[in-house]
Image (cartoon, rainbow, N blue to C red):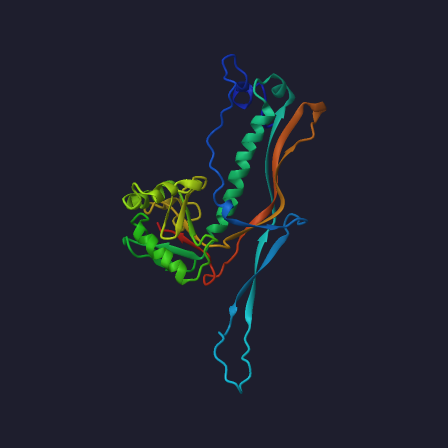
Length: 316
């Protein structure tokens, strides 16, 4: 069987040694970042392959105005579009032998539980990220530190030769407000990106927030700061270049940043992620633990006019 066994050191034998510390140590793992910005929608009773729908209501076709006393009331209509996502099964498992469980100094099931929880977190966050990266709105700056170009077809045509800075953020927040992208309940937008991508911005803002009360408040709640009504959040779970136009060829501008308002990505949950134990086989000698999830992710607004996510991107 392919899994954890006692006779191979790297697959289980190392779980007991005369000088082995009893403290459990795990590889560092990123926390879920993209998934926390998803809107949860119940999809209980759905089966694998089922499509989950939600309605998106547009504005009225003709705006109202003043009335003339003898004229009839004007009439108009509004459009209704449907967003969809496919409910899929997600999961992974680690089989292990009864001998490993009996001879190991460390609790095998506890270790596997923790490892599988990390795997579930990474897998589902990556699935959420893929939908954020499906936004049709892309931002590039070329060589400018104070202007951005908005692309609405989902593909960046310009290479970013500068890092994201406060000049770009100022323009981007104005652009989001001009497009009437709804902010979160606190009136702020969010920006999510890798730590190195925010380095230039941090340096730009360092003098603005030095030795003042708001500078200390900015590091609370897992955020790295707030500027121009945008709260910046770091993520390190999605590799550089994934989902961008440049992909692995991205050499300038560091990496993608997702600027967003409310109603970004929907998560339909049929069965919340859970840990499951395998029914022992071979008279109890063959064991295993798995994580399982039934659900899916889908970007809420695919049309550029209604899109709520703007992605800092680059052609190369």
